[in-house]
Length: 376
Length: 162
Image (cartoon, rainbow over all chains, first blue to last red; front, side):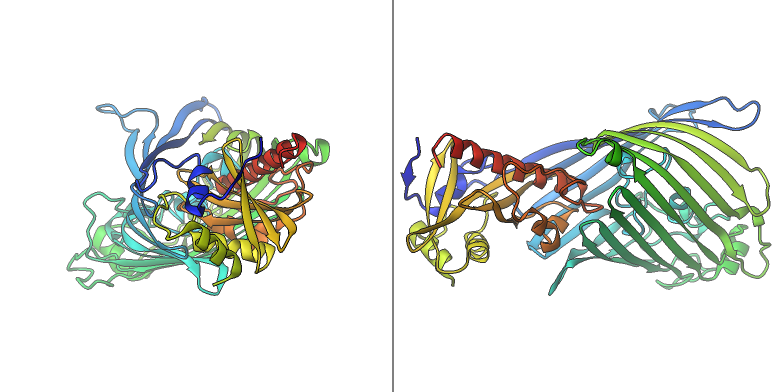
C-alpha cells in the first residue's frame, strides 16, 4: 500500500539506509576482507621438480570510527607458516593507516602507507593482474609490496575531478640494503623501527575515466641513513624514482604497461662503503596485452577468460658507477603468456608459461606455473 | 540556495538528526537540482521500508529518486538513483564516498554511462558499463546497487504502487 508521508528529510534519509543505526549515534563498523594466492611453479631442466606454495594469505581489517575517520590494515602471511629454523615464511603488516576525510576532495592519511608507484604496488590483489606471479619488474625495479611509514594527503585536483593526487612524506630507504640484482628492494624499511634520517617525498597524479587510467609518480629522498661515510644530511645519497603507468580497455582487449627509471645518487660511494654492486641507474618496464575470449564466444556471460602476453625488459645495471663492472646478466627480458579465468570478478585461476632471458645468456630458464587467487 | 533544497529544508527543519552514514542534505538537494532542474518539489512514498521521492515541477511529475547505500570494500557508498516517469535513469550520483581507493565512480564520465538505462536493460560491468582500473570493487558495488534500485522501482510499478 502506497503511503503518502510528509516526513522530514532527515527521517527520509535515516529510514532508507540499511547501514544506519540510531539517529545521532556515530555508527562504528568493522569490516573483514582479504586476498590470497596459491602458486604452482615448475622450472625447466632436470632435477627441478614442481613446487606448490601458499604464496600469500592476507587478512584485511578495516574499522570506521566515524563517518570521516577510519583505519585500514592488511596483515600478511607469506609461505603459509613461520617456524623456527625455517628460511621462508613471513608475517608482516602490508598496510595500516588512518584516513581522515576532511572534505569530499581531501583525505588526510597517516600510518604504514603503500608507495604510489606503478600499478601493482597499490593494486596487487591476484584477480587484478595477469600471470601467476607478479611481474619481475614489480620485484626488482619497483619493489612491491613497498610500504613505509609517514603521512600525507590524497584527493582530487580542484576543478579537475577526474585527476586524483596522492602526496606522502615517508621514511626513506637505506642504501646498505641495495643490491645489484634487486636494486633498491633491500633498502625498504617496511615499518620496522625505520630510520627517519632521510625523510622522502613521494607522490602520484592519476587520470581516470571508463576504460582508461594513466598514472605518473615520483619518489625523492636520501638513503644515507646517517652513515657518516655517505653523509648525515637528510638528502645525502639521494634516490630519485620516476614512474609512469597506463591501463586501457577497449572491447575485449585490455592493455597495461609500467615504466620506471631510478637514479641512485652516490652509487659509487654506496658500493665502496658496503661492498655492493648497485647500478647508478635502474630502469625498465613491461607491456601487456590481453583478450577476453568469452566476449565474442559468450557475450552474455559475466565470466572472463583472458589470454595474455606480457613482455618485460629491465636492467638493474642500466648504468654503473666508476669501479663497478656492468653485469650483462642483469639486463633481463622476460616474456610471459597464458590465461586467467575468472568465474567471478574476484576469483581467478591462472596458468602461464614464462621465458626468462638475459643479455649474458646465463642461467636462462623457462617456467610453467599455475595459480589460484581471490579477494573479498 | 536552490528551490529543491530550500523546500526540503523547509520540510525537514534544522538538520539536527543526520546520522553518520546519511547524505548531507545540501548535497542531496544539489544533486536533485542537477538531475531534475531547479524549482522542483518533492513528496515521498514509503515502499517496503524504502523512501521514494517523487519529484514534481508544479503539478507535473518529473520522475522518482531513491537514496541508497551499498557496501564497497569496507564502507558504505551513499548514492542517488533518479529516473524519469518511465523509470529510465535520468542519472545516478555518488553522495558520499568513504573508501580509500576507487573514488573514480563519482566521476561524471563513469556515471553518465547509466543515463537512459531502464529496469529491462542489462547492466553488467565490462559489458554495458565500462569499469575503471583500480576502482573494481566500487564499480561492481555501485553497478549492482543501481541494478537493485531499478529492480525495486520496476517491482513497485508492476504492483501498481508507484
